Length: 522
Image (cartoon, helix red, strand yellow):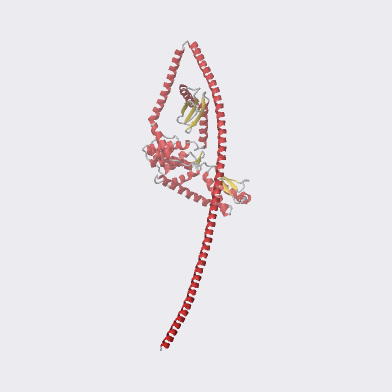
């Protein structure tokens, strides 16, 4: 039994040892596996770390390269900007040097000129001193001669001379006073100047010079032969029917229509243009086109006259008078368009009548109709004044209108403020410089004569006619003419202008004497 127990215990111990050994082997085997796995994982982690480090190095190198590129680019741009600025500075420096050189040369030239002028001034001063001394000596000689001839002393002669001058001045003053008294009886001077200034400054009319020929353009010079026609039939029909001269010469692609009658010339020009567009140039067609154009012109002149009446706001007017107003566009006097002149007179007369307390609408109506007879002078005999009065009487126009028609040419006395405004406006419109060719020529001659009269006196440096010839400014040499002599010089020039020049109104003689002292601080 014991043996069995011992053998069982031994077997149990042996089996336990064997199990322990087997268990240990198994445990060692598992541990090795775990170790290998751990080593494998550690190797993988190490490899991954190496890869991350490698990638980080590559990334850092790329960033470094990019930074280097940016740095180089910025460096290149900075160098380029620096070069540009250096070039700009160099150019400015060169420009400044050239400017400095030019200024130095200019200053040297000015210094040389000033020195030359100083030399000339010194010479002139010496010459002026000699002339002044000679002048004073001649005055002394003249006074001695007067004393010797008249048996008077210098003081007595001076007294007599001053008395004569005073008498002459008093006579001139009395003449001026009397003249202004006469003017004041008809119209106050200041009020008239104010009214004229208001009217002319508030209205500015257009002016266009009228020619004596119109040009008609041709697309082809062969049309000239068609306009002439067989044996000249077409051109004869045209000239007979239109009442103009048609000039066909060597001028390329153009023919001329000549006539003093602007209305007929305008109709003829329009007729020729329509015939050229139509292409059928023959006597029957010419007459048909001419009649059509005449009707159109009649309608257009009526419409234009109606627009003028509406714009002026002067009330109702007979259609025949309205048509004649439109025809004034085709009438000229001394190169001044009659309609433009009439509208100027109407506007100016309305403004002046309003300022003087008159009827502005009636004044504008009278101004618009004062030259209406000019629209009839080509077709009827007689002066435009008589024709205008007749046509206005026929259509029962206001008596002020009739009075203005006669009075603006001096055939009747002015009977109203409105008529006076029309006459003044007519004179302003016709007499202003440039309005009419004849007036312009006489104006230029008058201005030239005024300047020549003023310039021929001793001591006068320059003379300018200004203010449309109503004032002359005379600049004198201060070394030759003193203040008292300048007053006498103004009187002498005014007297010579009165005797030698024809002019309206009055001319102001303004003698200017100026002395200057110039010195330079160095």
